[in-house]
Amino acid sequence: MFVVSAENRSCLCCSRRTTPEKFYIEAGDDGCLDVLAIDRVSTEMTLTAIPTGCCALLCIVIFNHLVVLGMYLVVITKKKKVGDLLGHVVWKAVEFDIISYKKTVLHLTDNQMQDNKTFLSMINNVLQTDGLYFATDYDLTHTLQRLANTSPEFQEMSLVERADQRFVWNSHLLREFMTQPEVRTNFFITIKSSCINGKVFEWSIISRRSCFRAGVRYYVRGIDSEGHAANYVETEQIVQYNSAKASFVQTRGSIPFYWSQRPNLKYKPKPQISKTVNHLDGFQRHFDSQIILYGRQVVLNLINQKGSEKPLEQAFDKLVASLGNGMIKYIAFDFHKECSRMRWHRLQILLDMVTEMQDEFGYFLVDAEGKVLLSQEGTFRSNCMDCLDRTNVIQNLLARRSLHSQLQKMGVLHMGQEIEEQTDFEKNYKNAWADNADACAKQYAGTGALKTDFTRTGKRTQWGLLMDGWNSMIRYYKNNFSDGFRQDSIDLFLGNYAVDEADWTTPLCDTKDWKFLTLPIIMVVAFSMCIICLVMAGDVWTETLAYVLFWGTASVVTGGLILFNGRDFVDAPKLVQKEKLD
Image (cartoon, helix red, strand yellow):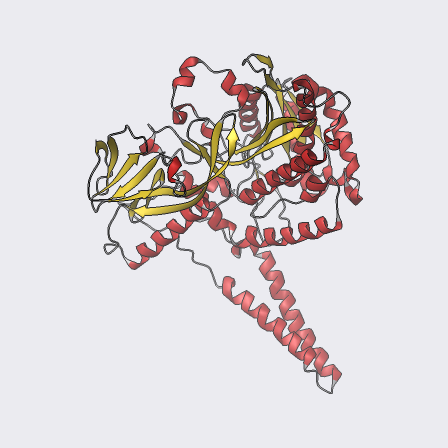
């Protein structure tokens, strides 16, 4: 990846020059005499002298992508500075351009042109998702503790070579540019300069979303055969004061066995646990990798312990017991039951349960000379059904407790002082964690997070309940009527689906049977006639009642048939693998 700013020439790193035959990527360094030439026919890349007579456009090249028309060059045309993380500038990608290698589309049929347009809109859909970040001289994919425990050989590797591939979202698409030093990641990053007791320190949150088993809310649940969990996010809270650094890491991820929850027009589809696979194998792979990466695991399962979620909680508990691994501690906490009727103070029950374990895990701390004083010995792995709203509330509370200890250790907070007493910082802290919740929720569920009024204000409000209701309605619509397209967009972007230019057969054709149009039309007509009969009632009430009952019954029956065949009416993925659908 080459990095450049289209908005500020003073931080130019490269430019793109275009001719009918080639793209030329020119480095921004004054001493660089060669450019990278990309042949628009063969797609071959070579180093050559700077050409003359071609137009220069400032950009950031991030990858090639193959669709029906052929290869496309995708570039970032505008970036926004998020802040300085440990002395390194972090950028957020804001605007993009997609340029075809081919100079004409005349060789495509009408159907191929339509498919090509759809694929490009899928790529744009992912690019416009809020949360795409990069840095040109810092590895955003690793935690401070992982970076501190690396060898000199690791430090000499390029960022692409040494990056944690779980969090490099354009890894597949960078295959032609693997020698370049920048990576692009699907994160949430906030960087704040704060002051307590007259002492200025930098405070940051980085949430790294895994590109393994990536997808949207109802189409990607559980784990895959490699143990990768859906909606897996590693969240690191970083503090820097007087060159000393501290970090606290938590993770979240879907309940790690094989289950699904396909949308079917119902507000809350019933979860289905697979009965045809060995859950323990994938479950063990998941936790083996977590223990290698993070050490001891405390699993905080926040789902309901009754109703449709109860079988998931029981299966999770049983699998942990079957695994018999002393490095894993399982804690089930029925969030909704404990906090019902606005009793949010009862979250302290869970915090009290894990206080001793959090103290044992500790956090990562490095002094101003770079000496490691403390290491984090384990992580809390939190989950609810979506690993969004309930999960973020708990992660925020655990991070607050760790931050309090870190600031005291660094000498920013005095003994006896509480973070809650620091009004300005407390407001920034709450808003940053609420923004983190919104970013994770938008990427997975399509809307901002629920319960963020508690995160932002420390209490549940009536306005917050109304906003949760509004967001829930938007989620219902998106999850049922637009998430198939979003899932296809992610699969295309990550290379889970590959376009075969030579042997093209469209997967986008979606033939619906007679029910798809007939039943909704009948229901709308019947409901309309029912309303008309009520509004334009005649003198004979028995006749009016008969008409209302007939049309009302017709609308209710057709509505019931639509719900019964709900899966035929939702927007389902067309490119996705069967494994994600089952």
